[in-house]
Amino acid sequence: MSSPVTSSDRRWWALGVLSITQLMVALDATVINIALPHAQLDLHFSLANRQWLITAYALSFGSLLLIGGRLSDMWGRRTSLYVGLAGFALASALGGWAHNFATLVTARAVQGVFGAVLAPAALAALSSTFREPQERAKAFSIYGAIGASGAAIGLLLGGALTQWASWRWCLFINLFFAAIAILGVTFFVAGGKREDGANLDVFGTLLGSAGLFFVVYGFAHAVNTGWGNDITWGSLVIGVGLLVAFVRWQQRSKNPLLPIRLLINRVRGGSLVALFLTSIGIFGISLFLAYYLQGTLGYSPLRTGVAFLPLVAAIALSAFIASARLLGVSGPRPLVPTGMLLSMMGMVLFTKLTPNADYFSNVLPGLVVTGLGLGLIFAPAIASATAGVRPSDVGAASALVNTTQQIGGSMGLALLNTIAVSVTARSNRVPVPISSQFSQRVAVHHAAVLATLHGYAVAFWWAAVFFGAGAILTFGLLESGVPEHDVGLPALS
Image 1 (cartoon, rainbow, N blue to C red):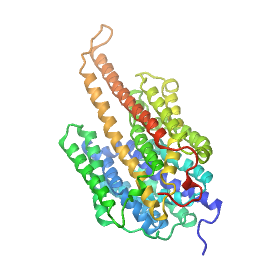
Image 2 (image 1 turned 90 degrees about the horizontal axis):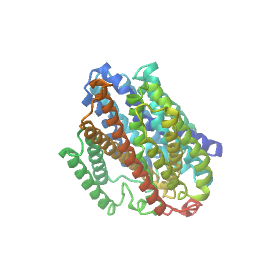
Image 3 (image 1 turned 180 degrees about the vertical axis):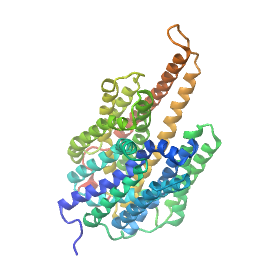
Image 4 (image 1 turned 60 degrees about the horizontal axis):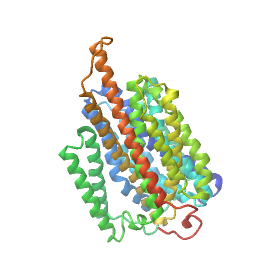
C-alpha cells in the first residue's frame, strides 16, 4: 500500500491538517483566559484558584514536551498525532462538562499532557514532509504564521464563544478541531512507523521532566507572589539544578532524550535563541494590550479579540509574502534580525498609550509593525531549528523548539507581569494633588489609571529590550543563504 503522502497536493493537505493541530494547541493558551471570569462565577471558585487553571496546563505541557517529542520518534508521527488529538479532545470535553473546580483543573492538566504529545509530533511530521528548500519555506511560513497568531486568534474566539454561547464552548470547540484533524491525519500524514534508533531514556526522562516542571512552576509562582518569595526561587534553583544534571546525563546516555548534538549546531542555536526571546517579548502584546483594551478603554471581550485581527493579518502578510519567498533563497539571517527590530519598534509604539487613546491612531500602528516583525521571526526560526536533523531525532528537535517557546513564555509572563505590577504599585504610592476641578475620587481614579499605564509602558520597554537583544544575537549566530543540510546533503545535526 502506498504512503498517504505521495504527491505535492497531499503534502499541502498534510500542511493544512498539521496547521489545525498547531492552531488548537496555540490558541488554547489564551482562549480560556477570557472564559475564566465566567467559569469562576458559574463554578464558584476563588480568584487564587483561577490562576491554577492556567498553571495546571502550563506545568503538564511544559514539563512533558521532551518526552512527547521522543515518543513521536518511537511511535511514529501518525500514532502520536492520533494519541495527542484524541486525548486532547477528551480532556476538553471533560473540562466543558465540569461542574466543579477540581474537574476543570484536572481537565486542564490532562490537556497539557496530550498537548505535549501533540505539539512536537505535528512539527516533526511537518519537518519530515517538506524537505525541498522552497516548499519548506512556504510550509513553515504558513505553520509559523498560525503559531504566532494563535494567541490573538484565541482572544477573538474566546470572546465570541463566551459572549454568544458559553464559556464551556471555549473547551468544546476543540472537539471540532480534533475531529477534522484526525480525519486529515488518516488520509494525508505519513509517518506510521517508528524511527530506527529511537528509544526511551527513562532516567533522562525523569531528570528532564522534573527540571522543566520546577522551572515552569517557579515562573508561574512568581506571577502571584513576586520574585521575593522563597518557593519561587527554590523551585527555580531546583529546576536549573535538575536540568544541568539532565544535560550531563544526556552526554553519557546511549539513548538520550535530547541528543546534545542538536544543541551545538550554530544555526539551530540561533533559531532557538530567537524563539526564546520572542516568546518572552510577545507576552507584552497578548497580556498587557488585552488588559489595556478591556480595563482602560472599556472594550468587551469580543471587541478586544476583533481589535487584534490586524496583528493576525500583518503576521500572515509578512510570513506568506516575505518569509515564504525569501527564506529558501536568503536563509534566516536577513529575516529574523529584521523581524526582531520591527517587533522592538512595535513595543516602543505601545509605550505611548494613554487613557483615552484612539485605536486607529495609537494602537493599530503598533499591532501592524509588530505583526510584520513576528511573521519574519517564527517561520524562519522554526524551519531552521528543525532542518537537517537525523530521522530518529526529528521528534526530539521539534520538542526542543516547543520547550524553548514554553519556557520563554513562562518566563515572559512572570518577568513582565512582575515588572508591570511593581512599577504600578510604586506609582500609586505617589501623592495625588487634588485640584478644585476634580473631586478626590476622580483624581485618585485618574492617578490609578496613569500608574497602571506606566507599569504597562515599562513592561513594553523591557519587551523591546528583549527583541533588541534578539536582533543582535541572531545576526551573529544565524547564517545567510540556504544551509547545506537543506539541499539534499546528509544531515549535519
